[in-house]
Each structure stands twice: as structure tokens, then as C-alpha cells.
Image (cartoon, rainbow, N blue to C red; front, side):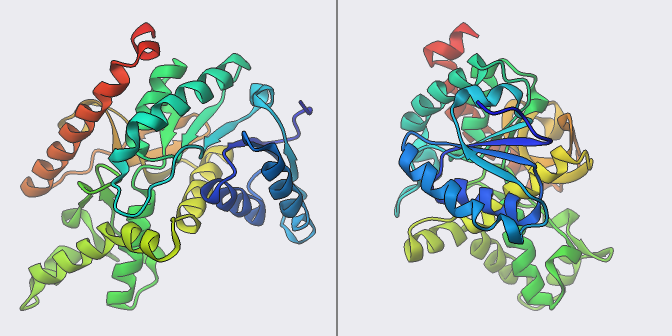
Length: 322
């Protein structure tokens, strides 16, 4: 274990997502100290060495090393990217059983180090595994954050940007609910410079069909990327980096992440993707944006589905003991 220098991030899992996240953090200069952990230490050493060779061209001289769970003791963020990846033909929810076992061992080891920071969860199914991390760790809910629908939201904004020839950053639109097949496009709240997108699209002759096409493109993007290259990594890596930046630099920005609902959006006791304020204390407040009747019904169904999956966590022996 090395002595902490500035903001410290530990990345658990040096697969495609973990290294895309690490590269994005390094390239954008978001942290001072980065530690990689992987069961395959040789791979982790190779990735760390490769990343270090880019440090001279990074905004800040980030220290990159390979470590153990003991390094989590003084970390500000532990980002979990380890687990079985989604394969062609699989849904994210198909991954629950095996990744639940992986997460129990990881979270137990991290907490044994004396960790008192924020967990950032990327592994799928991210909503269920964020709930598991919260249960296994015993930390307050605001300090266990899942990547949620941050990638779905980015995909929606990119798609809308292409449709309307506007930079995605100028579009206020979000995807909420499960990071998976029951994800919802919150059309009723979407706008460009205050102009309601739903109103604009519905004025088209085929407006509803156009909206449905955009939604399908967003929802199916992961399947198409996995079919083409085997996995998704770059978009989620940058999304995780954005969340981390908000935490480490106390930005209090609103991002669509997976967090525990306690009455917001009419739901209780479920980790699910919603807009939340992110700062140094974690996901400190859910922004309870009003949805229309159809969106509310779809969100309730997405929450019902996730609650059913969360029962596997509640039935896990370690979770029952918490």
C-alpha cells in the first residue's frame, strides 16, 4: 500500500470498462492517485505501465500503480468494473447470479480495509449490483452510486443532436429507469433551449413513430455495439469519469445515476436510474422531475422489475445478515 497523494481512485477490474474509465480519468486529469486491482495481476501491471507512459501528456501528473484491497482504506472512490461481461444475446439481468457472488467478495474485501469513501458501480446489471453493494457495505445510500442511465442519457442526446443538428451538450433530455430493456425516455421533460421536444416531434406527420424510432435506437445501441465489437467500453468509461469528477471536485451537478429511492417518483426501496445531485458527499438528492402519465406507468413497471431482481440480493446470506 502506498501513501495517498491528493484525490485517490481505486479501479477494481482491468477489463475493457475499467481501463476505459482509468484512461478517461488520466486523460482528463480528474485524480492525483489511481490504483488498479485485478485478480490477473500481470494484466493489471501491463495496463498500469501502459497508462503511465501517457502521463507526460496528461493535464496532471497522476500516479498510476497496481495494488491490493488494502489500498482502498484511504480512497475517495472505489469504482467496481469487475464481473462477467454481457455476451451477444444476453440481457443485463441475465448476469445477476454470477456477478452477485463476485460482488460479495469484492465489497467485503474493500470494507475490510477500512474504506470510508464512495462506491461507484459499473458492472451489469448495474441497478441490482448497486443495491447489492449498498446492502453488503452497510454504507449510507448516498455513498453507493451506480452508473445508472448516464450512458443511455448520453446516447439519447447524441441521437437527438444528430436529428436536430445541435450539440448534444445543449440538449436537456434524459433516460430513466433500469439500465436495460425497460429504460424510459422522459420525453415530457426534454427540451432544446426551453423548446419542448415532445411538442416539436408530435407536430410532425409521423411524430410518434419518429419518437419511437429514436427510443429504439437508444435502447438497442448496446446490443448493436456488442454484436459489432464484443462489448461497450468507451462511452461508459467517460460517463464514469464524469460522475467521478463531480464527486472529487464537489460540483453538485445533476446526472442520471442509479440511487436508492425513498418516495421519489412514487417508489421506495429500489436502486434505479434517476436524475440526482452529485457532489463530494455522493448522490445527495434526487431531482423528482414530473413525468406524464404514460412515463410514470413505465417507470413504475421498470421499478417493479428491478425490485423483483433485488430479491435475489435480499435472499443472499450476507445481505440477510446486514
